[in-house]
Image 1 (cartoon, helix red, strand yellow):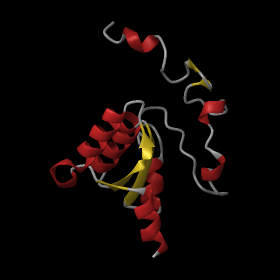
Image 2: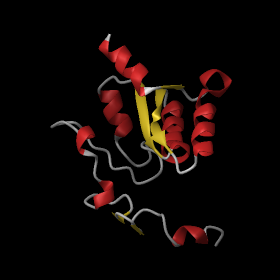
Image 3: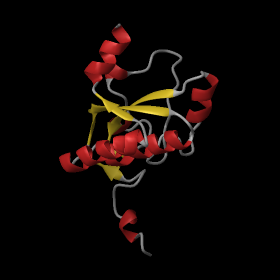
Image 4: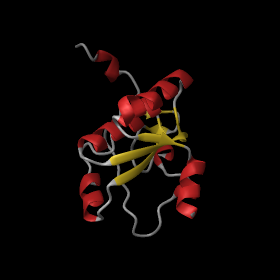
Length: 138
């Protein structure tokens, strides 16, 4: 099997330092208190690396006439990048908050952000959380 490395660790449901990886109810799965959704806000459990794969996110966004997404999270080069690419393929404009994303590698983080804005913003745009807060506040 050319993918035998995936059977060892790091896959959804395998044990990690904060419980089973990406399994609702496990300590590492919960949303931090300051970002917890308000009552009635949808919560998307993503079973893969992108937020659109096998979820109803696209339907929720379309039903609410949302065409621009603010994207942040970990890791920049995997989950964030996959979500941005999936969104772009579906016609959504993505604004990635670079300072609200992270990676285990600073180099991967920086390269992933540069890839998003390459060729005139092929996948979207990148800004800072301060710039988004200022734009929303004005």
